[in-house]
Image (cartoon, rainbow, N blue to C red; front, side, top):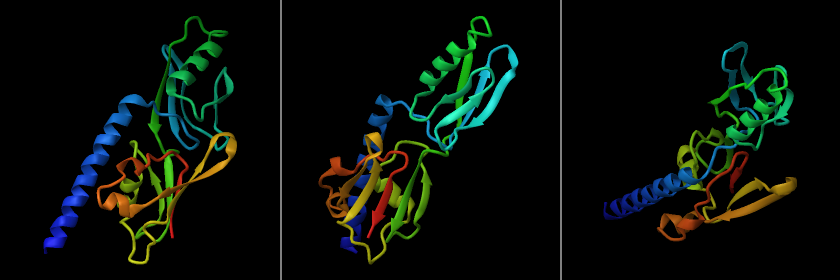
Amino acid sequence: MKTFKIKLAKALLIMAMCLFYQTSFAETEKYLINPGDILEISVWNEDALKREVRVLPDGTIGFPLTGTVSASGRSVEALKKELTEKLTEYIAEPVVNIAVKSAEGNAVYMTGQVKNPGKFIMTEPMNVMQILSLAGGLTPFAAENDIVILRKGSKGAAESIKFEYGDLEEGNSLSKNHLLKSGDVIVVP
């Protein structure tokens, strides 16, 4: 019973630290649009220019009068600025509004020795421990200190990030509780 209470206390401490880390991240980073996201785009006082669009797998969207525009990897503000510039050719002082209606493209994937592997949509910034929790935790056969995060790096090159669950379980190396990015694959051997 005593060991259970100690493990519970450690888990609660880790969760509290995860929430603190998540809050400080949210204050400094802007959401970047991903393929699969659904955007609601409208132009003030132009009823014909209101659309709900899904970002295509190649990262583009189509919108009337602007043609195909690259959206993936950009902030909502950057996309709004480009659409506004393109629409000025046709409309005097267009006021473009963009809302992320669904962040379906902001997903990570969990595979291997977890209770519920699969795709997890991140509706907020999340780290490895949080996604492991959503996946139901590790199975008894998991190699907890050999977990790997596979991530697409810059210029399409893949990188592999090692994650040792045992360190975080003991409350050590909290900086290694990596914040996940869209498209990450967490492999638990």
